[in-house]
Length: 191
Image (cartoon, rainbow, N blue to C red; front, side):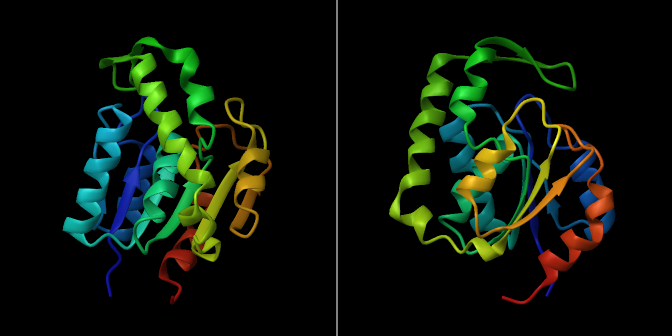
């Protein structure tokens, strides 16, 4: 069976970035990588609709996209690859309130309302649904030199996940290619 993969980009990034293009090279055209609107509740709803409509089997989420991916995995039976997941996104993204420029040059407004929505979503990480999440279906790539996030938060939140800590990468984790074999094996594993 062909895997259908949803890539969820990080804050101020875009769907058609380096990581999603690498995934398309590796896995072909069954990669969905929409641009987020940076309205957390609406984005999560749109992503859930896409998962149902396209019968997504795997989510790959980077930074804020990793946080969203974790929340979606509580609703859908998917495999999950998290790249430096922003599991404390309300606190981390508070500092960006105002006008933000995406990596492609487009601008959007980030407000306290969006931070509040992230806070509302973050509360789900202590819910019964989160406690029942099968962490063996989660692969986490963490950068030891992440200048944005504390990798220990992901280690503490997901102690039973499959975790790789890279000694050289930073928050962007631009070279996921060196983990292609592990990512491919994880996505194609049975179960």
